[in-house]
Amino acid sequence: MEDILTTPISQTALAHFEARLQNDEKIEPKDWMPEAYRKTVLRQMMQHAHSEVIGMQPEGNWVLRAPSLRAKKILLAKIQDEGGHGLYLYSAAETLGMDRTEMIQLLHEQKAKYSSIFNYPALTWADIGAIGWLVDGAAIVNQVSLQRTSYGPYARAMVRICKEESFHQRQGYEIMATMMKGTPEQQAMAQDAMNRWWWPSLMMFGPHDADSPHTEQSMEWKIKRESNDRLRQKFIDKTIDQAYVIGLTIPDKDLKFNEETKSYSIGPINWDEFWSVVKGNGPCNKQRMTHHIKYHEEGRWVREALEAFAKKQIEMN
Ligand code: BYC
Image 1 (cartoon, rainbow, N blue to C red):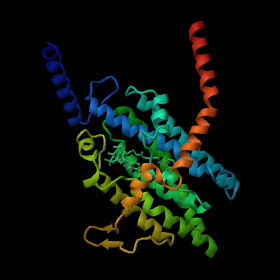
Image 2: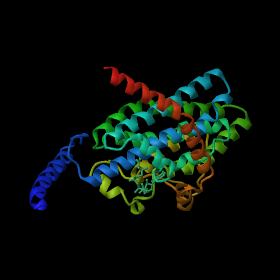
Image 3: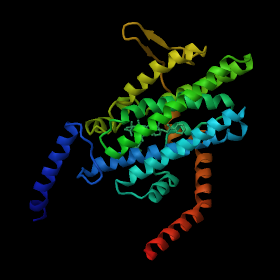
């Protein structure tokens, strides 16, 4: 009986959902969507929101040690932007039916991921340059394509986030360019940061397409508009020339430029390192999570006070 009632309705809904995707229309929170689509978008948006927030930690480490007031103000503004990105993304992800309290609990239980890149330490001021230039640079390449993702609230959040990320990428490049014009020690520091951040930045795009379990379905649903390898290649081609302009070397002895495709081919990525970091064994995984849990707990009274205030306002109205 239940089948007779529900099947025709869900088939019509499915046909409508697919037609909207076909026409490049956005899927909105109140629209019917397959459960697997909802779960996939939610997983990706939650991972993205957690990445923005955890990503504040390596840079936060340098606010008190920035080399000038100007550098400190810029870094502080950038870190605040990242926190803001996390907040838009949590709000947008909540439209898929999960409260952010639950998302954060999943993060703390290590059931929800965040980007592998934020498990590496920021050891010197040049690392702040490398994070802005390479990490935000890689993030933008991905996020520009996500402006066309099929889930409306995610796509709209990406438009604003991309504007801010492009400023972040430039501030990082400015730090690297300044250091490359400096003393031999400063140049060596910039090259060292490049050597340590280059490969982890390439890993941010995720496993090769052939080893990526979600890419095919996510591209069919237009959640992802370009594959991991395609985005990684775009980043490589864009960034290598920027490195050469300021005199940095790419730490890859197999790097080759293909005149025909006007594109670079790189040496093998260390996927064992990637999976080890994703599974919690990177240099800073434990530190990042301990820090997040500590400050989340310390902020509990603020959340409780706000909830009590909101409840009181409702009672009074
Ligand atoms: N790290 O089938 P795949 C920023 C996981 S922050 C960890 O390719 P998918 C910034 C993946 O989750 C911006 N895990 O998956 C902030 C999956 O595991 P599960 C960060 C990774 O989702 C502060 C499994 O591997 N950007 O800019 O189709 C300061 C198989 O992968 C990673 C985003 O979050 C990774 N790198 O594609 C500075 C972008 N890669 O869930 C800067 C949004 C893969 O099955 N996310 N995995 O257990 C995406 O675009 C996609 O989720 C990915 C992966 C391309 C990352």
